[in-house]
Length: 171
Image (tube, rainbow, N blue to C red; front, side):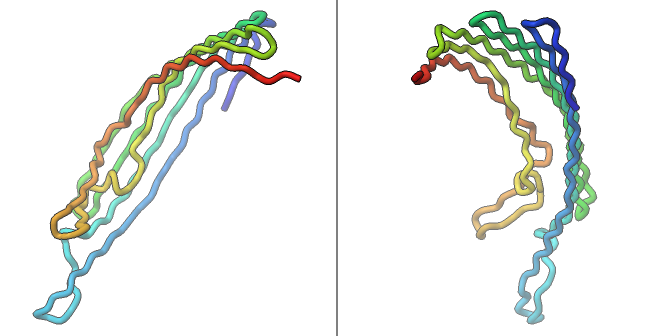
């Protein structure tokens, strides 16, 4: 859902909301051959049955102003995901709610029709969403290597500054 409102001939306000739900259930059944019985037997240390659910509330607002050769934008985003991970084999539940704010800004100036200077700042988030990274059930790639996910992993954020000078070919 988005909302746009002109404030004047030079400025505009925007705001919006988005909600999303991700849900999946995965079962991994591992069996190991038992030489004594001559049968494949379940390996309880390697069985995984889990449900993952992530609900994300997100909103943004932006103020955009332009005057002559100058343009300014200031924005802020907010995100409040709630991750819930249930491992049925051990009846363990991991609830991982968090919230984040993401400011961004841009200032641009057109020197002429072909040249522009631009300074910007933005922040980004990367949420852990791969099942292998979240599932705490041990996975053996060989006898010496074991991989175990972390269901309480937090997202990573990054900040980026950018200074650009651009030239367009004019005909």
